[in-house]
Amino acid sequence: MHFTKFCFFLKVLASTILLVLIVLDASALSAETRLQLYPVCPAHRSDGKISGSVNDMPLEFEYFRNIDRHYYEINYAHFAADGPVCVDLNIKGSVKDASLRTVRKDISFQQHGSQLKFVLPGPGHYYLKLPHMGQPQPGKEDSGTYTVIFFIDDLFKMTDKKMNPDGQDVIVITSKGVISDPTLDQTDQIQALLDDGGQIYFSAGIYRTGSLRIPSNTTIYMEPGSILKAVDDPSKINGEYLKISQVENVRIYGPGIIDANYDSARYDENIHIINTDKARNLIFEDIIIQNSVSWALHILRSEFVTVRNIKVFSGKDGIDPDSSSDVLVENVCVLAYDDAVAIKVRKRGYSTERVAIRNSIMASKASALKVGTETRGPIRDITFENCEVFDSDRGIILYARDGGPVENVTWRDIRLSMIYWPTEDGGSPIQLVIKNRDESSPTPTPVRDCAIENVVAFPTQACEFRGLADTPLKGVELKNITFNVLPPGENRPPLIRSYDHVALTIQGLEVNWQGHRHLWKGLLSGSGVIVEKSN
Image (cartoon, one colour):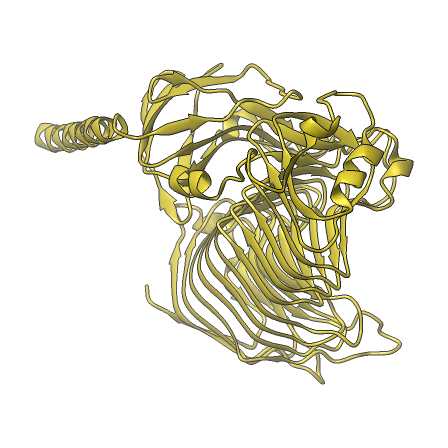
């Protein structure tokens, strides 16, 4: 018995020494890293719970809460680096059950009371979960989650592509009479500068406007510390803050902020932050977009759209490619009150094709990686790849209701950390559902040649599969699925729930009950799903 304890002590000691050596080695490397710490915006907020430094330089954290009930509560730091960085973090109060992650990787840290020390390996997005500081509670609308996020831009890329304010034909808005002012409505002045297109430079500061139209051949650069923010009067927003309609060759980039200024006391209608329609050759890069009361980035009837390294805090959906083609979404971070990413066709006569979402982090109080619900035209050649999902109610989702068809959709190399949101379904990692939207006029939606593979999930609710008699759920290949089971959000559900008209096989299922087997009804209920387990 004493020998066993001694061996356990040696194992713990060896692990601690190894972690210390790794941190010391990485700290030495981080000393060679160049940093650009971005200035905080004039609308800077703090909740006073997080402070710290990066490579011994003080960090400023921005506080954000995306909605007034069942919210995501966030503190984030945003800066650029060209290598690994050493972070020292101080948290007000005790720290329990903390976890530090990036896309499909966990990152080790040292903890001494309420102080954390860790090395982030370089440019990317990283999130620190602190569940003891916030967790949604049944019957309590004013409850949510608490996360610290680190957005590290690639310093080489940011330096290389920065717009030169002294460049020929560059319009610096502050040189044209626009001033930084937290209350002044400057819609007319800024719209006049945009009307002729060209290169527009937003200097650090806060600029308030109503809705703006972006013409063809326009490049907008948001300098660090700049914020373009909607005015308080909702009548001046007209359903969309930035309108990019029937134009081409538009780029909006830089580490500034575009803020739709959502406030439930003022806004009672849907307002998108960026809305495209019948546009082509669009790039959205590096910016933070936040405070939407509807979809943050709606890509409607558009083609050749690149969305890269943006950060989205949304009061509804995050990014919605809708009736669009050739869309690339990569290296983004989305926290959404509704769906994080939703692929759809809302208008008949259109299709959504060739869309890739990859290397990204998502959180959603509804569905994280979704196809549907609107499927009023073909949806085909869609890929979700190498993505991290956390604190989400539903993970991999297909809702086919309006005719489609849905063809060649792949979810590959995904990690899903589910959570029980009391107002939703409660933590289902996978739902594939064919259902008629209008029972009086059914429109079968066939699903063909789809795949879900190499998925690790932490479920708190059953997976769900269902089809219809005239369109059974088949044509989906599921393989290499791992469930690390958490306590369920409801009373003893099965891990997999299959309804009628389903014909699926899960090849290579591994279930780690983690001591929670007695809380679940079992592995499978219903028929139509064949499980080939590897354990």
